[in-house]
Every structure is written in structure tokens, then in C-alpha cells.
Image (cartoon, rainbow, N blue to C red; front, side, top):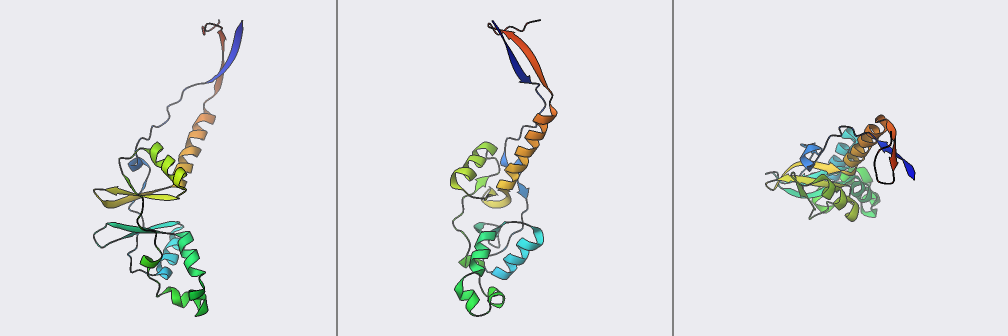
Length: 170
């Protein structure tokens, strides 16, 4: 007996091994005393969904997400007295997620992706010697998946004939 096996030719896929290779370097950040209004403006201007909150020396204190900003803006406390003007007085330290799970820049991509999926978080700040150096998000992993799918689609499949022993037939 012989069978037909469809194989995909191998192509040179870039091997990304660490978070440092795909993270966004020098992400936009704010401090704990910055306001909800400032965060809302930064998110909108730069089309981002996460803002690391750092101390003056660059130590990671927390993260404010777009969802945090939307939720804080919808609270009855803000809406009772005129929403947007009150946003100027809400410190990010009061709405940020803290403590924050982070990864070292040398962390593996696979492990980091699994962490995002398992914990259902949209981003992980990236540290070097305890200081923020980047951020990696679920969107970064979607970009990798798209790139890999495009490369696989570009590789032309070839049909190979094999016998039961795994030997190629002529």
C-alpha cells in the first residue's frame, strides 16, 4: 500500500525567542498623581489600551487600562457633579491595577503568551533590572500570528508520495 501525504515546504520563519524582540520599547507612561483626564487623552491620542504607571525613578507601580478609564468615568461619583471636570481630580493611583504581573525582557514569547491567555490579561509590562523598558500586548501576539499565517500561505504545498515504510516513491 502507498499513501499520499501533502506536505508544506519549509520556509525561513524568523525565530523570535524573547519578549525583547517584539515588545513595544519605551511605552507611553504616566505617574500615580496624573489624572483620569490625562490618561483618557493619552489613550485617545496614541490609540493605545494600556498605560504603565511608573514612579519618578522608572519603577513600575501599576497599569491603567482603557477599561479602567471607562469604568472610572462611568461611576456615579463622577457623573453626579459633571463628569469630565471631575476627571481632572481623580488620581491614577486610585484606579490603577496594582500590583502588576510583569516579565523580564529575556522571558520566552511562548511562556508570556500562555501567561496572557491563562490570566486573561491584555498586557504585561517588561522590566530590565526592575525598571520598565517595554510592554507586550495581546495585539503583539496577533501580529505574530498574522505574520506566520502569511508566511505559511506563501509557501507552496507540494504533494509527496510515500509507501508504507515512509520511503518516497518515484
